Length: 459
Image (cartoon, rainbow, N blue to C red; front, side, top):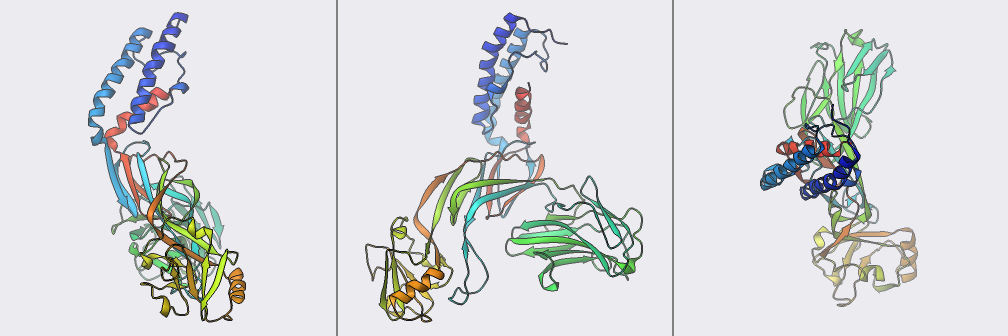
């Protein structure tokens, strides 16, 4: 048992010890991970250090700092990178915050098809970024234990589900989980070993787009008498719900009937592991319609702008038959609009590109047309379905807002409050609700750093 500190020793601990811990803090900050030296209790005993003598203990901490300085020479060896729709790596450090996590951001449009006055495709930007860090299993079980049509579903500590009872008639079902999966290839597995019939449909796992509403929105189905695992590919980020079905013809559920549901990246079903995941929500300072955000360091780049016309603009004028010009400070205050018109988005019209003002057609628009004004930004559209007057167009615009998202020639920076996002030990899958991610992380070679920070933070 260490000897309690004397008053003199406490002074030594306060003066010398604090300097040493602050040095550790500076070094850890250089690695992108810090401890707060002010939170250390310097009037504590030397519990946790091998020596019972305070001066020896301080010397021991000095040795730690020297060793840490030497380890800085191998800094590049402990930092790795991964990127993609899901950034996957198998050498994550144990609970060490990532160095950076850059998320792509892009505007989205509702619906499908070509925007038109009779096919409105609303534009939505991003107000917050949700980055998810999981282990191998991507599908969380979000629903608790319950009973449905004779079957009791019990959620176990490892997120597996034990089913008992007998379906009275038809089927018994329950939602298992919900996830927005990025584009990619995945494998679904998890049927109980006790359900092995090849002739009777005993059970099913059904993965659907949104809530199940019939066969038209099923992504993939597993049936105990057909297939027990399945690989599927998503071409875009998809809102997925997973549901368990049990059927009356199967009779009573055998003992130890346990669903070990798992969705994993790739084309192979592997041994079940409990879901380990955390969602980190980061609020942005404004709605972003295109760009990137480093959600750890709080730095972003805005590469797209957005305007919405609602009939209150300073200049609305008729140019020619059913063709109207809109000008306003909300346009002039934006960075230069990119000439790459192919990528611009509008909720009601299609952009004419290259610009041919004389031939603008119904349902088309122009942006910043130099044939109208080489110095002022303007929006021009043609709408044949309304009366051909400025007053009628203005009235129509009041209740039929025009949304436009467009790329900038010159990106602009923004800042926000970042988040502390630690990795799991070993396998990690990191993805976002917004787009692709690129992560710099401390790999398993840096576990000594996590241990050191934990030790120095103990009070």
